[in-house]
Amino acid sequence: MLRLIRRPAYPGELNHELVWPAASVAGAVFAWGWFLAGLRLPPCVFMRLTGLPCLGCGGTRCARNLVQLDFIPAFLHHPGFFLVVTLATLWTIYSAVFWLRRDTLRLRFFVEPGKARRVRVTFFLLLAVHWAWQCYYLTR
Image (cartoon, rainbow, N blue to C red; front, side, top):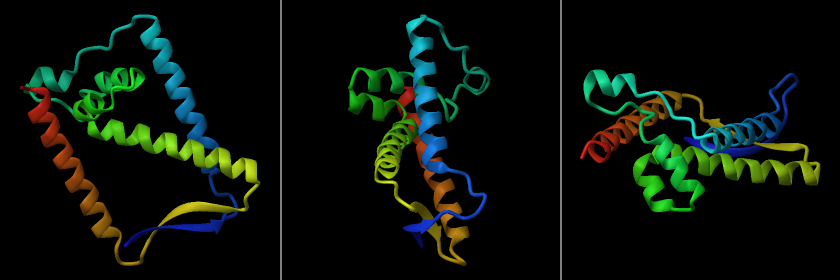
């Protein structure tokens, strides 16, 4: 269904081994500066209107726990953000190895023809489960 493959870059293809690690590091530096300056985030409009957390609620607490290396509380506050940060870290390490080895084959996801709908449905089901967890954990 969904596989990781190694293949050469297509002409004009986005250089994922350069763009995403740079974006991850820039985001981490921005967040670090924001926290260091003592700035606060605006209140969540979705939570104010509905009483339920949005898909981003808990992300700041997750980030603060990750900085303090408290992994279990970080995961409990926002499993999705925890997963994104973990994958971004792994991708940055892969990219560094890719550039140091001067590799010509790039690691990419491949969705088998005819299976894309199943991948999308699975993604949205996981998103719904994630939101249900946030509604349970962040409102108790």
